[in-house]
Structure formats: C-alpha cells, structure tokens
Length: 113
Image (cartoon, rainbow, N blue to C red):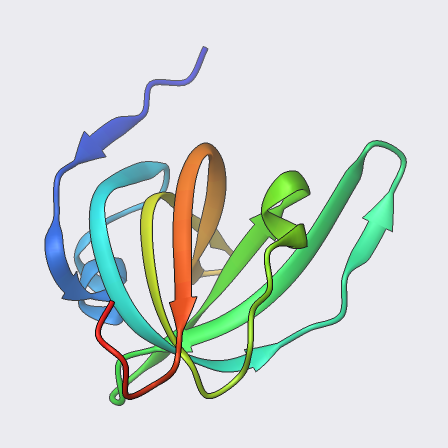
C-alpha cells in the first residue's frame, strides 16, 4: 500500500498549499477558497465525479469531488471551506481530490464561513 503523508494546515491559500506539497499528500486542515467554475457531473459504473475550479485570486486549481461529495450543492462565485483533501498530480499539473474524510461548506462570497 502506498504511504501517504498528512499535513495539518490552518486557513491557508489553496494554491499556496498546492505549490508547497507534492503528490499524494493529504491536507487535514481547512482551506478557504473561491469557486470559479463548476463542471457537470460525470458518471461511470460505481463512481461519480464533478470538477470544481477553486482559487485564491492569484491562482486556480481543480478540486475533484468524488461520489457522495458530488451531491452537495456547489455554486460559482461563492466561497468554499474545504478540509481533508488529497493533493494529486497528473501530467505535471497539481489538483485537489476529495477523500472519504473530506468535508466542505459553500456560502455566499460575502458571508463568513
């Protein structure tokens, strides 16, 4: 089984974190970010996935929501608080991927989370 390293991060920029961490690191802290784009749900046998582009105003990164996380409402232009995600890398591009432990909350851009 592949070893994953866990990091505790408290309220940091999503893109700053992705820049620091390498492949297969789990972020256990809370990340605050804005939602810029939400894709349609894609499905296959036994899985569902939705890609959400999140960022901090300087950079953007894709957050891949899998299975039960796809069902929660996500709206462009809103703010998101997300925790317990995996930093993934494909073709030299980093992204965030939900895990069984992932939790996220979406609220109005001007609301406090």
